[in-house]
Each structure stands twice: as C-alpha cells, then as structure tokens.
Image (tube, rainbow, N blue to C red; front, side, top):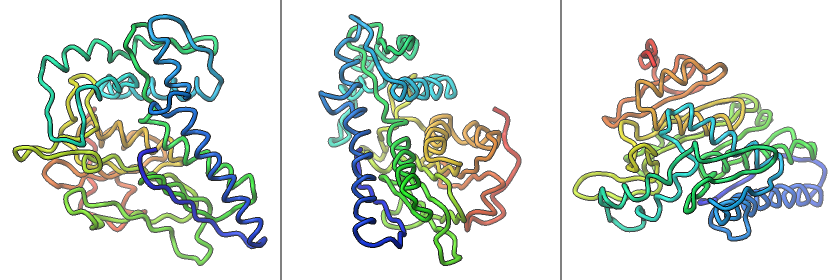
Length: 308
C-alpha cells in the first residue's frame, strides 16, 4: 500500500495463539491490497479500468461501498478529490523533478471525471475509454480498520496499528497511559511536530506534502493533486484528523488538505466527533477546539472556525 505497516497487540493466550492472530491480520491486509491496488493487473480496480468505455464490471458489496465512499469524498471537496485522478500519473512522476506542461495536463483532465463513474446494481462502469479508478484516497485507511476488526474478532482488546502513517487503536494500552501518536514535522524529517494522546479506540490519519514529492526551483511538488487543476494542492502542508475510525479520519484529512486552511478547518470543526490540526504553507498550526484535550498543542491555537 505504498509504505511500511505494523500491527502491535497484547494477548495472554500463548505464543501460538498470538502468531495465529498475527497471520490472520497480515492475510486481511494483503487481501485488500490484492483486491483494490491499481498496480496489480488482477485487482478489481484494474479490471474496471480495462473495461472503461466498454462494459460495466460486476462487483461485490465491499467494492461498491468503497467506490461510493470515494465519490462522496469527491462531492465533499467540490471535485478537488476525484477517484479517477490516477490518469494524471501519466504526466506526474514524483521520482523525478519534472513538471508537466499545461498541454499534457489538458489532454488528461477530461478523463478525470467523477460523473463518469456509474455505480448501480452491484456494477461499476467508467463511461469513457482511458478512464481509471484509483481508490488510494480511501483504501489504506479502510484496510487499517478491517485489520483492526480481525484483531477484535480474535479477542484482542489492546492494539495499535500503523499503515504508513494511518493509525488505528483498540482499547487502552493496558498500563494506564494514553496511546501517543507522533505527527511528523513536514519540513524537518525525523522530527515530531506534535503528538496526539488517546485513551481508547480511535483512528488517526495525516495527509502531507512531504512523502511523495520533489522540489524544483524552490517549489515543492507533491502527489496530493487537486483534480480540478491537475496540479498539487496549495495552502496546507499537513492535515491530521482524529475520528472514530481510520476510514473516516483518512477521508477528512484528505478533504481538509485539498480544501485549504480556512475551509479545511471549518469542515473539521463542523464534523461531529472529529478533531484535527492543519499546518499551513507558512508553518502555522490551525486546530479544532477539541485538540486541546487530546494533544500537546498549545491552547492559543483554538479559534472560531471560518465560514465554509
């Protein structure tokens, strides 16, 4: 899923039981990657892309729900997120410092079209040839939650899962202390900018411009593309969200990042049971009021939310 993953849990039923639980957790993570990765020819996502403009593809309820979640995220962001944005990787390659021309992006942007994704009667259809489906904006966070479900189904009551920065906790640590989840400083690799402290189960997700990126002529270009322009989103360099699940936290972190500081913070503030913190392009921290209870951020950050 594009990064390292770890699952840590406490169990007192012996080594054999713990190893069986670990294997079940690993199997579930790989099942989701095999099913939904756009980089695998045998995934349902690749099958949908191969049939773009030709025929609907029969899918199960899990696939339908993930596609619907991605489309809802697109609506929430006014199209800045789009599950068909993957075609833009034909122009962008963040392993090399090359900036696509306006003409390159203009040729691809007609294929970035959420309205061209039809979901009905357990089928998914991309209406134009050349369109692709990319569930990268929702899939990894969904995987974290599903693996957490596997642990709980096997009787685990204390665990922390980290899939490339998307975190899910189960229960408490067991020693009375809160879970402590560090959030990276986007401009100082290896440094923690602040920590989220949780007692009990929750999801924590961060979207940032520092993972897949390059800097050219003093400008940072990153993989979180605004689907309406085909270029990297501007205004926010890191968005961290705490919610009841990693799936919800991840979607809202992506939305807040793409919407920009004012609208992103307002979205988080208006979302029940959700807290979050944004770091804007100037390095300033903007946080929802509840972050004062679950982090080590200073109290001076918390202000009225700007209007959407």
